[in-house]
Length: 268
Image 1 (cartoon, rainbow, N blue to C red):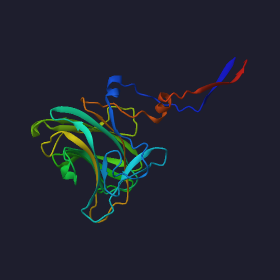
Image 2: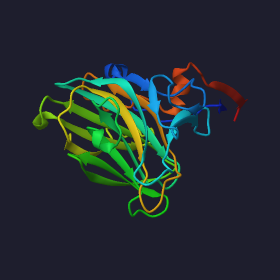
Image 3: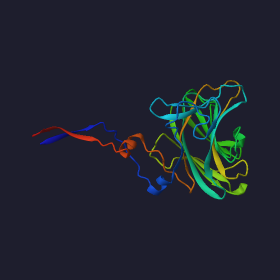
Image 4: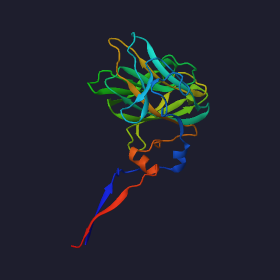
């Protein structure tokens, strides 16, 4: 006798088990769900320029999209207060980003400044830059004391996950951070350590603002959006787990079960 079993509407994936305590330590800063599409400014505590909007990513998922197509030297920005890594503590900020096409220059980071106007106001940050990369590629770099290092070549039209482990000291000698990167919801954790022990460019107070910036630069301006989503914080220490379950795991967590159908049974 043989039995043929058909799985109905099942997404099969390999899931890496993580420590429940670390997973539970993540606090959601923003996932943009439930927001009305359109201008981001004023929604759920966000302060944003006109080119920062809430939109669909082409599925049912909502994202923040921002770009800069204005005069050279100007900045478009979005930031939100409340994500706190206090002085003399260590915390981890997590976010995901996606470049819809060839980008010019974008930043994402943390600061203690109340109204960050440019990248000089950010204490810990990464830069997404076209640089000299070919079509469909861009640079990912980490700020180290104001300069940028830790080069990685990334692909457009691809989601990436970033962890910034922030050691917020009380003097420049004790203010450091590490940046990890991995594509999408990769179960290969921890991610690629892009840069370790990067220095803050200035002595910080409590890191309380998460910020995205788009800089317009010569010889052309950017018409490509960078999407931000799934911003999380663990203010209790180092956390290199992924706070966002893989899409197929979400079905399981949501209580959706697969139907196992005994489709054919015969004697052989």
